[in-house]
Image 1 (cartoon, helix red, strand yellow):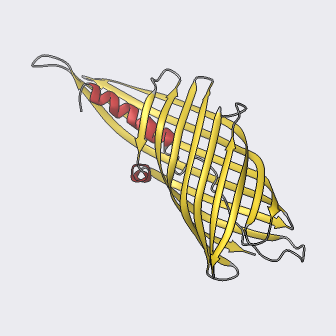
Image 2 (cartoon, rainbow, N blue to C red):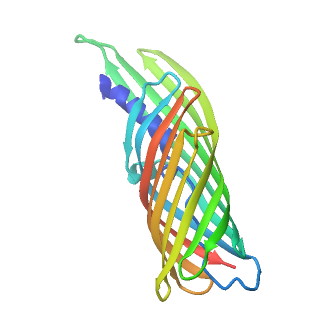
Length: 273
């Protein structure tokens, strides 16, 4: 690759590692089975899940120019080293606690070249190796405002995001070479409030709708999320969950811009006890 193609490769490499959070952004809503709560006993549900999200938007860090990003889930999956996602819900009577955790580690590398003019133009080569880790933790308190056929919860909580990136860049021209290492991290907390609705339609099947808004300039300038899906109860303790989820985050502070939308299908297994 030569000329501006090398620049695009470098930018694409940075974005792929910094933003391969496609699975990012963002706490998947856990949905507990609506059951008889007259006993007043605690009820719990653990849900490991996967969100196959694409990423689209703009990012800018420090001296880098603002870059437009449009990555599919397959692009992100290619560079994934390790990922762990899980949600947990605890409920007693009308009160509940919602937790969500996402950890991602991404690594990738790329090489760009540029050849000078003339028949014996010199060729400069740059190789970059990048590693990115992202942690997202969410916690909220929920209150069931309506039980009946359609269970409705309102909730409020905090969502913590942290991105850590490390880069080793080696440049060479003729017999000369130099390696430069760079690292950085950015963390912030977003308050958020939301609503979740669960409505059974036929035996074993329940429709689920979820939405939240947050940031309010305290963390992100603004963030919002919606999800629509369904749950199928295999038994009293095991259920399958799937649907579609969209998350938007607009953060622009301290020389760091992250204005991204993430959307895609999600699937998980709920274990109640």
